[in-house]
Length: 393
Image 1 (cartoon, rainbow, N blue to C red):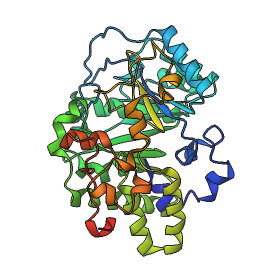
Image 2: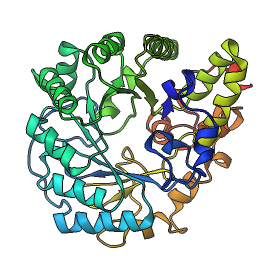
Image 3: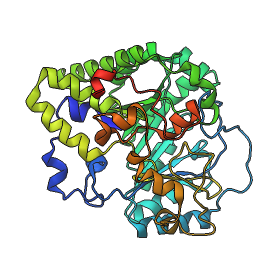
Image 4: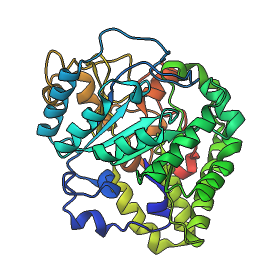
């Protein structure tokens, strides 16, 4: 996760997280990615069912009932364990999490246990009443997925009217004073709509937008050939940075992030180095605090059936199940080979990643994406768009 507005527009300084000691429990939410203790943010897929049919869905969800999901009581026990373990944020995801019975009570329980609660949703079910209940439950943030403007989004989501209903959900959140933002996964199908998404942010007064790089998991595995060419990725990141700066110059300090491609960190630094060397040095310090990809370290996932994954995209690998052992024990078990490797991955990488001068601030990027493309977990990141010269070869 690269905070474009934080880094490129200077809304965060390297001294800011240091002021709180970089402890995740003490950091405000906008500085959480710079914590030093890396207690994981946990994605809980509270259910698999979804009312849409998105082409990139990592959970391969359908609109039907699924067996074996954690019960309400099991969910409460899970959250108690996460809270006792020191997890700072729980992200309720799915499927579509707002379909889950008792979701508002689960959110409220997380908040009562002093965790920040976040929901990742397609937004189509957020009526005024639902938005009010999210607010009353103490939700910190709701991220609503829009993968393009109306025609593109509806094709992407597999339902006519999905865009209109999601936009209504955004407006309902704004009206009910629930912090809301957009989530946009970039592919060849929708890259042309990035500018239009920014226009929507302007006209609707949306305070946050996240641009995700495609990860090849679930139905998204079929989209490997639809990943952007490297030159087009660079152009998209340039557009995001340019537009973010323009918004800030207009007096609209929108929070803008890119997610799931840590190449964006050194790319932003190199661009800023040519524009403002003093500012670039501060940004480099922040990127080092961020530490790059945190799968299996600063982020984990609990699936609908209790299976634990290094992140939400590792559907094919589990490190145990919370029905058998608490998450806190599974996450800290030194005998788990994959978690141990992810936490000491630099020595296992080879090729361009192993030799890269930016390894300290990228951490080898997304290993699950390298595995999906090459079959080799430690192969070079296929979506790194930096040249050999830029990475120091």
